[in-house]
Length: 80
Image (cartoon, rainbow, N blue to C red; front, side, top):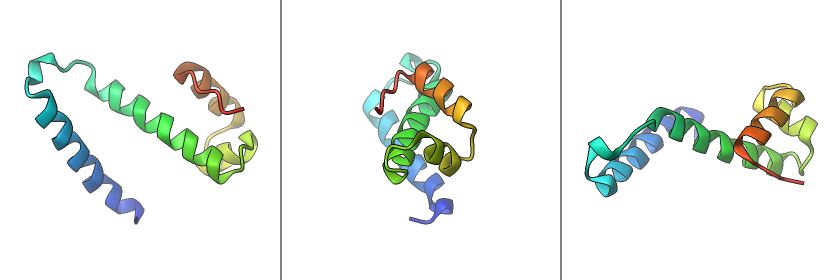
C-alpha cells in the first residue's frame, strides 16, 4: 500500500467504527483513542521490521530511542 493511500483506509475504518457505534454521543476522546491505536500498531510494525531492535525501530519511525521508550511505557507495550 502506498503511504498516501493510508488516509482512505483510515476513512473506511472510521466509517465502520461509527456504523458499529451507532450513537455518536457515546463517543468521547476519539482523537486520542485513534492516535494511541495507530501509535501502538506503528511501534509493533517497526519492531517487526527492525528484528526487535529498539534503536533500529526508532530510526524507522523517525524518532529518538528515548522517545520510543517513553511511548512504549505510556502505551504499555512490551516487545522484549
